[in-house]
Length: 259
Length: 355
Ligand SMILES: Nc1ncnc2c1ncn2[C@@H]1O[C@H](COP(=O)(O)OP(=O)(O)OP(=O)(O)O)[C@@H](O)[C@H]1O
Ligand SMILES: [Mg+2]
Image 1 (cartoon, rainbow over the protein chains, first blue to last red):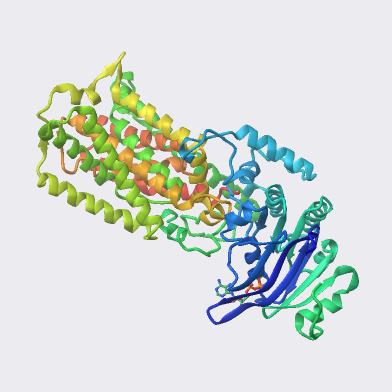
Image 2: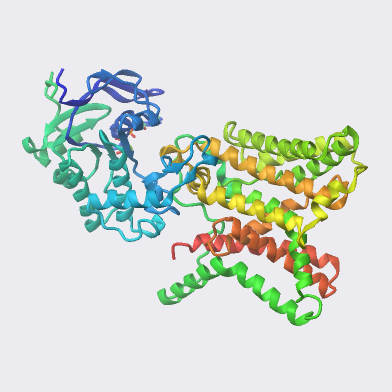
């Protein structure tokens, strides 16, 4: 087995009651991929992300991580394995600073045992968060002092992605990272995603914006009605093609060889 | 209200709002020009941040002018602080679940029962003082844990759940006492806990200071406190980040109930007897204090120092009214009005927090 593959999904199905949200989806994610996941509303993108994040278990099918079958749920297990997720609604605590958000749930603290007896080390957390953001060339004033709900939407998204990248050493999952952002803010977020990719981080990103996809992704996977209908190298396709797959104007070639 | 809406703690897949639900509905009155609206927002922010302190300062001013000889004296302030000590302990305890986004309506009944029980244990079972106190305070902790489990694991709305457990505690109270006050047959040793002084400082004030400091440290310097604050803002975000949401809520309820039990024991020591309903009123005064506190310095967030300022505001008001010879009913009017004003100010603080 090619150890180049970071993670493979094999014939994954997932249904909710009568709804088949994912239908026989196989997908190989190579190390260093920046994979754009597109498709119409209800196509199954978020469900796929949630399977990778450990938030859902597949109804059937296997997940293979670095050559070994692996159960990813619950989310804490996926996190332990180095898979981090930035959900669409950010998951930041508005009254906390960026540094506090960075370490929420994984605080640096003195002492062991129950959380009640563990003394938080704000200074260390602040230092490390600052350094983490600096390394990613993210310049946000007030990392240690400013509640994130006083920041702009773009700054919050940068913080959320940086947090994911900081903890997710294998795979970073992004669900619509540029939704609800302005042009300049979107560009900053996309630049950050590019930088993370350049550092070798593997990223799967859901988006409705094909422009944004083209700016950062080396692969495009199109979902339609729970099925994977296309899996293309960005360099070997164009936007028209992708749109055709999304709308169903173009059907997958029969017996399409797995990438 | 915010904490009452915290039932959505237990809904697994909800997209929790990123910010705390507002207490006030958004009342857009008239069509102000942008400039006027900005000025109004700034005013509201100031009101939500300093409202309580303004109320406190004006009362201090007014009563000092009206009664310079009796109100504005060191002796009177020593009395105020001593009298508010027990209430502060209970209110500060309540602040912890409020920070976590949960109401606890049982604290007053827990205080009553624990006060009665400690007198009963000392008088009839012959238990020494310290074990009796530990037993009763431990019972308070257990009641809090039960509250937390019912609310988080079973998913009952905190408002209803704690009303239920509180009523059960009232039942236990009557089962134990038959509704009749218990007299303390024990020595003065027990009453000395609340009445005694060290180097001129009343024990009660010292105990209050210790409890406040402890709670402040828990909320602001421990991992548990960080998690309690996080779930109060967005339980879903906290859960995704790996916070043990249920456990944090249970700990918060346990802290509130423990403080209520301590308050009950001190109250019994102060009274020298076990009164069936003596602690019930702590519920209202604690909520007033905590909500007033949320409009002190922090734009609508509950916090320990704020609650202390809140208790002080209530205490100064009541004391001042008594000093100017206002009839007793005015104190109820005052406390009631203050609760409404407090909730309004806290809500304004939250609503305009982002400016
Ligand atoms: N928890 C759930 N319970 C029931 N049905 C669900 C659940 N999650 C997803 N579904 C259904 O599965 C299908 C795929 O949903 P999914 O959220 O994965 O789509 P999506 O591609 O992310 O769409 P969108 O672009 O609108 O976010 C939809 O029909 C949806 O209604
Ligand atoms: Mg989706």
